[in-house]
Amino acid sequence: MSSIITEKTTANSIYSVGKRDKTDEEEKMLSEIANFISKIMIESDLNKIAKNTVNTIARLFHLNEMIITIWDDEINRFRILACYGYPADTEKEILNLEFTVDWISQVIPDRFHLDEDILFLSAEEIWEFEKMDEPDKVLKDLIEDVGDLTIDHPEVAYEPRESKDQWHELDFFEFIIRDYNGKPLGYLEINDSDDEKLPTMEELLLILTFVEITGIALESARMREKQSVAKERIDGLTSLMTQDLNRYYKDSVKALGMIQRPGVNETIGKQSIENLIRSTRESLAIIEKVGKLKEIESRSYLTSIGSDPLICLNKSAEDIKKKYPELRLNVQIKEKSFFTKCDPSIEDLFNACLETIISMKKKMNEEITIELVKKHAYKGVDEIDISFVAPDIDSITWHRLILDISSVDPKFGKLSFSSGLFNKYLMVFISRRYGGRVWVEESSVNFSGPKGALHVSLPIYEYE
Image (cartoon, rainbow, N blue to C red; front, side):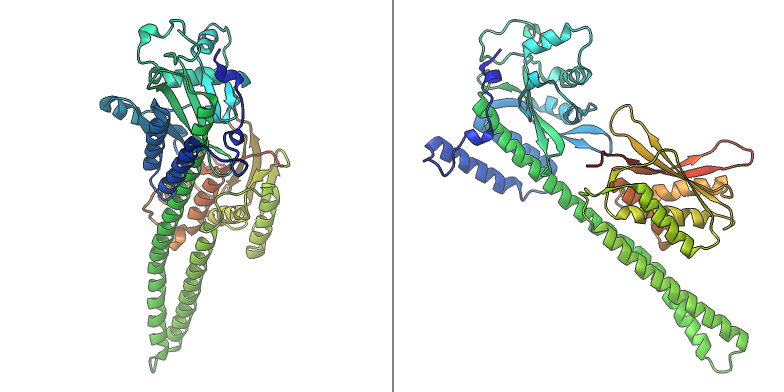
């Protein structure tokens, strides 16, 4: 339709830096890119980064009606970070919108791609698409999501294009925003231009340069935010755990005073010594947990080590059985070879799960059953579900576990935390860093048998 479709090229062909003298226009653009980098790379607010991006692109390329979104894993939605070119009241409405279709992770037909990360949906393509008996579902959802953002004047939406370079009411461009590892992060959408002319391929590739820089800036800001939140969380948890430590320290001082008191009888002296030993052990345990927490929290969030969780689970089970020789574990695998991308924290996850179940048990010799099941997803990636069941745990205890898990969920800034909740915190935190979750299944059955189960669900990736 437009010459845009046939003028495919690469960003490297825009400038031959170092091979020839650059024109004044090229020098100006390189200066703009350098200024853009210096502004947004130091910014920590995602919305300000996005706003700066749309303002810069609008000024340099005479474009308007733009939005920038980012995928939010917490709500499984695209959140709009910034928009440009809309009336103030409309802009407020747009900023409150959320889009549900994660099209950037799906396969879009090649005919819509001007570049790997640039999509152009023209009026003609949309007309043709609407006539299909079985249209592509991803494209259908994308077009529906864009909706009224694309159309200012519905009365001319289906009129023919006046010229090949005219921007039609139904035309829109999508630029995929990626993080520094190339993972889709969000997108920039452009719905109109000041002169109502379609941009050239060279202009689109230049816009993509700004989009690529924006992706790195957004991910850097998110990582700084995570590090900041993690530091606050560690400091807060350390403070709360120190309260326990102070209590045990006071108990130790009291016990020591009793031992040193002249004329203390043998029974009181013995009890005081036992209290001193217990308080010292508890204090050392808290110090160890704080150190463990800091070590796990400081590990990289971007994990890429391929592991079979079954191997890690077996290792955790062996370590736990050495600690509790009378413990009986029954591991059931419905399907072998589950591969997921994770770091050694997965062993800490399984240890925390087993320690939590053991702390809930009434009898140590009652068997714990661990079951691994692969769950196929209709959309998205498949999951491995690891369940921990012990028949001697009652319904009240399972329900209390639900409350404990919700109180230590790392997505909340303020935590109700003590050393007794340490393993539950680790379960929730580590599973989330792998893109998984921890949850409790409560049984509604009143007769004898398991009253509940602790579940850990983790995404499964192809082992590369």
